[in-house]
Image 1 (tube, rainbow, N blue to C red):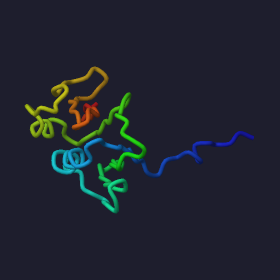
Image 2: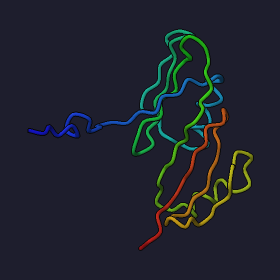
Image 3: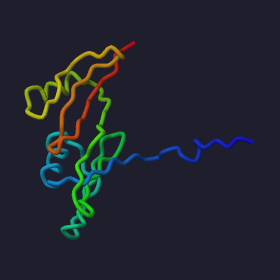
Length: 129
């Protein structure tokens, strides 16, 4: 009898955890620039600080670096949004834009920005089929 492992690994919540070198700068970016609402925030000690942001589909969590700072490498975030063109109007011309809005052959339109510590963030809207 074969077990259905998907029932064991089905994700009910996704959290992307980051340990930023400059906590306040990155926190401000996600709160003020991206305007993600804060779910929870704590600051009980210099090494026990955190904030959780609601992106609508996952939680982005910033935490005090544990045991030293390690830059994020080899990953990025992608968020599907309702109207990428309207969002682009907000970001166009900003210094943190990595690439401008463009249509992609795989069926969406996207642009990419970078957070203050270099994490690439793509926003996209799927083409109407």
